[in-house]
Image (cartoon, rainbow, N blue to C red; front, top):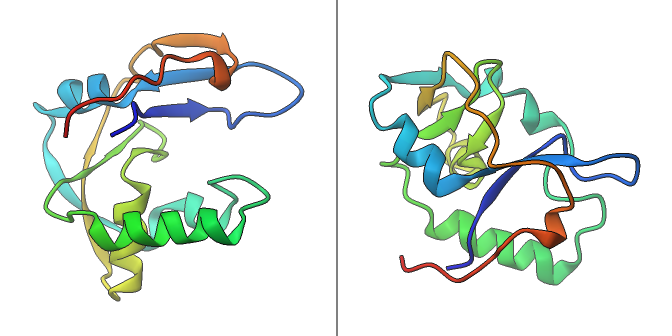
Length: 129
């Protein structure tokens, strides 16, 4: 599997992006309490998330990821409720007609692994899993 990062703000032409290593976010979130979060509270469901110009092949890739995702793992939320890991799980829960999803939410924002970076320059080595 390709290395994953949470990027914020989303990549644009007018500035750098901060990036969090998702493996590190998972480790940091292990001690957090798990709660059920209403899907309607996830504001990113109504904003572009995976890029402005998805091709049909891109959509097919995301459909496969949504289909194969495991809802037994909680999503990870930032202190302001932004999804830092788990958007495919959020979409699966939405498609299945669920009202809530399990989530771990940070009280304090973890420092990013990379500041003001170009996402294309991040190390995307393959990981096991």
